[in-house]
Image 1 (cartoon, rainbow, N blue to C red):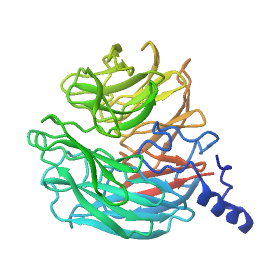
Image 2 (image 1 turned 30 degrees about the horizontal axis):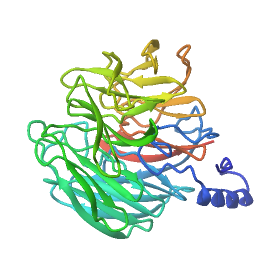
Image 3 (image 1 turned 135 degrees about the horizontal axis):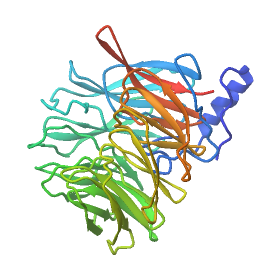
Image 4 (image 1 turned 45 degrees about the vertical axis):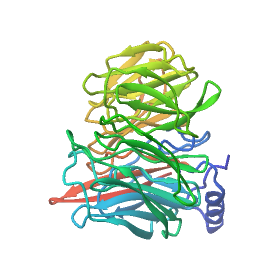
Length: 418
């Protein structure tokens, strides 16, 4: 693990140390859900608890276009996807991690935007993924999902049609982020026609495996976890909680779910996996991941768009209406619940024992991961709109938010640090 990143306002000598540290960091936030796939920052990370427009803002950079994807952090760079809805252009933008200066912007798709999506969705909602040398971007087009590979200088290495995309009954748009696993990039698209999960070689884009999915709608991205002695690719939706072999796509086990559609990424604690859904029924459930498919506990809390967070034997969640919960992960016993306020679409992240959660109005709540009681530490306002989950890395928070002024909307990427 790398040493904590020094404060940026120190001497040039410390700036040199900073540059060296970033270049060799092994805890970059390179994919959705972070370095350990659980939205928990590396041990020893101590990002700020409090900030405002004039406090603990290291830099602020304008993002062209609109999107709900999270930023990723790769070595000395911060990358994010975005879309110009008027010109119908989907792009990847790269910023200097130390200064916030835009280094490059690569347009990867033009035209063929879906004619209709949900008002809370965008044409750039999937988070990018990087293996440290390349960046993988997934964007929806009119009838297909495009997968593009760039190098860290923004040069396109390859681009393919990953598969079909044809929502019929509910034209809400696309959301799942790409998943990296052992030299492959895994893409999912679950709609009424041409649904699939497929893995592609990271270097060439060559298809490694593909499975067809039921003709039903779903928005959850898969995640790989080491549970019960093997790697399992977990995915909720299509009325099931399911586990797949990430090397082949073969189904390992499944259990019936209370809903057809879910949006969040599954989480786990020891031998249990957890998921929540909301259409047509709502609820949260825990399932044994040993192959038995045994449902251990359920409740009626709906965490629909958000993913949950498992930490030290407890499950933390915030529902659509901004109510925070803590449950005993193994038994489902409610430890506490507390109203934060405001609608919520982003997911909680954790660093140094503190949970960070932003609502749709741009307010970020910080509270302790304390199963004994709800303990609010701070409420921080930046902008007036936030749907993206932040990235925590190098004692910093990389936060995407928008500001509306005089009828105009502008997105910004913030680097929050002491």
